[in-house]
Length: 122
Image (tube, rainbow, N blue to C red; front, side, top):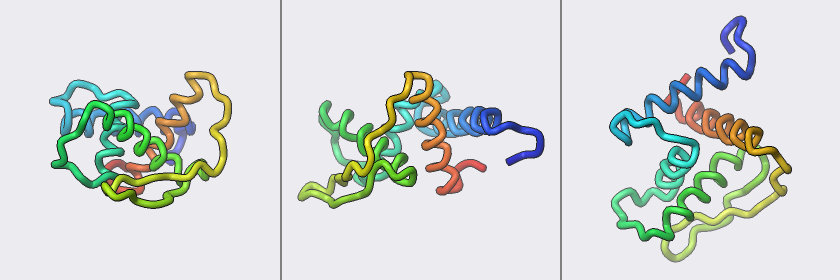
């Protein structure tokens, strides 16, 4: 953490950097929201980028994104791939009851951590 920055300020800065990088790469600079970035994580984790997706697949991709970014927090664990090569996760611990703003902070923190590990951001 940079000297003098609080955890919240650091998260805010890293989140803004992540949004800029991903928005420029995937949405012509139109800012992506949490759900959009979770969708990208789901696509990445599915690893079938060229596959034609059905409308229902979008929800499943966001779910894969959520499970993937929350796995290091102990909420989910990868379980198996099905016959179509879609990853499935086991819920290890129910998510805490959070207010909407707190949920957003948790997801932003988890997404920043996911992309830090992949060295997309610093």
